[in-house]
Structure formats: C-alpha cells, structure tokens
Length: 128
Image (cartoon, rainbow, N blue to C red; front, top):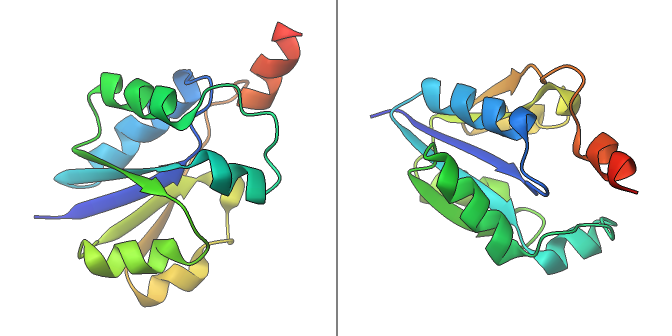
C-alpha cells in the first residue's frame, strides 16, 4: 500500500484545496492530511486564519479524500510523521516548489500544480 501525506491550513476550503487533495489521493492508496493547528499557524505568522482547526478538519473530512486527518502542531513534525506513518510520498502545492526537497531523504516529494486563479488570499481579499 502506497501512503501519501500532505499538509495545509485549509482555511476557507476552496476548489484549489479540493483539487490538491484529489491529486494527492490519486498518488497512492491511503492519504493522510495534516491540518495545521491554530497555535502553529499563529507561530508561523498566519494571523488572519478565519476558520478554527476543528472547522478546517471538518471541511477536509467532508471532501472524502482524506483517509486520516492529523494535526500539525510543531516545526519538524513532517519528518516525524513521515517516519511514524511509513509514508511513501509527500505531496504539496507547487507554490512550495523546492522548500521541501529535504524530505526526499525520507520519501518521494511531489509538487502538485496549483489551480490557476484560486487562492485563499484572493478569497479573503474579495470578502473584505
């Protein structure tokens, strides 16, 4: 069984997130989705997250793509999770291209193309 893991905030879950989850799921047999905790987002400077972690987990669950959802809560957790869950593929959006190459020591790293014209930042700007 090929296990895939991906991470994100998934704030204001939108078509771009859903496309990423679908494509990540297609890479293997089992998809684990790491959703960042509220405190981890704040520590990383994401002060404008609209949905709390429970709402974001519920939204990811509703997509039906995640076989398992975990909470990302600290720097370095990706390596720990890859080893803990025996991950074959780490998948992330192409906007992070190159940033996670260091994980290739532990598993295959795949950067998935973003959905053009869609971003959480743009959605938040449009809501203001």
